[in-house]
Amino acid sequence: MTSVLLFTGAFVWIIIVLALASRVWRAFREKAELDVADKTIVVTGCDSGFGEGVMQRLIGRGANVVALTYTEEGAAAALDSGAKAALACDLGNPAGQQWAIDFIHQHAGEELWGIVHSAGIALPGFVEYQPLANYQRTLDVNFMAIVALNKAIIPAIKKAKGRIVMISSVDGIVSLPGNAPYDAAKFALEGYADALRMELSFWDVSVSVVNPSTMKTPLVMQFFESHRPTWEAQQREDPNGSWQQAYPADWLNEYIAVNTPNLERIADDPAVTVKDLEHALIARSPRHRYLSGKFAKTFFRALWLMPERWAHAIKLKTIQPEPRR
Image 1: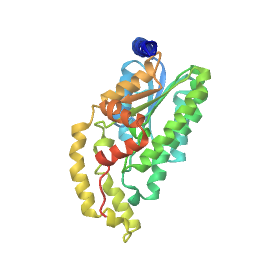
Image 2: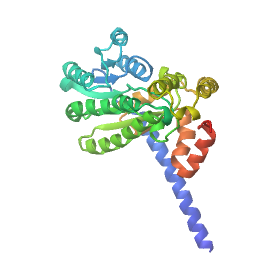
Image 3: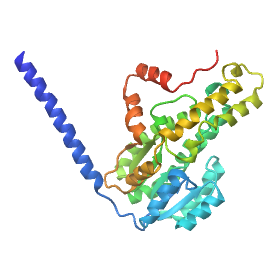
Image 4: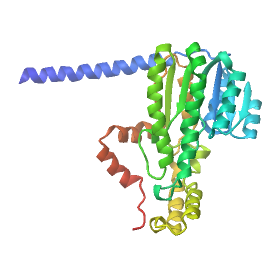
């Protein structure tokens, strides 16, 4: 019995020492950086938020940034910030995707070294009052646009042994209520990223995913208020539907009023995620995944790793609002 206890104790200590050594080694490796000066990097979603932030950081490092934005104002601002080229386009449809691909080929071509996929939308709302069109639109922007652009640029990225960085979300590892189209798109992105990483590893291409939690970006800070246009769209489609018994207008108003103030309290500075995006591009040994933000590293990591029944119970008590019954 004593020998068994000694063996178990020694084994535990070996695991602890190896874990600590692994963390120290990873921290050492991750400090080494590449020089991205004069490297050509595409960044999508440069109008605001993460895309704008990482674009500015890369320009500051001397990179040739090809910026994709949604608005003409965003494209003009990107050029003023020092982007090599900028295009305003809607990545949520095939025509916009092809326009972006042609623009990338024109302004990056064989010199393309990396891409940061930051463009994204959220059309929140509970499943019963989610118009089907919202699913298609969210998947088109948050998933299919990434697939289309990557497919077009992979030859250049392989030749350069470059980088592909994609913004997912904590919603890509832990599905949350009230945002099913977004969660579905992010889960699709997670599966795609894993496959892409394995397939391109033979050419020394690095593929990283960044999973932010709640950040002070325009997309996030408008999250609860953005339920309203979804609800109104469903009301136009189905004005007498039974869904309004569970989610009547006064319930929606209360839900928005109660939860909106919490965003400001819990949201992190988006600079945290911008730093992770930058690291995924410039580190000699980037991570496969970056859990970005304090809640991503704690609450959502715990939900992700615990048994599903436990995670369901916790989400039910802490996140899921009770509908009318």
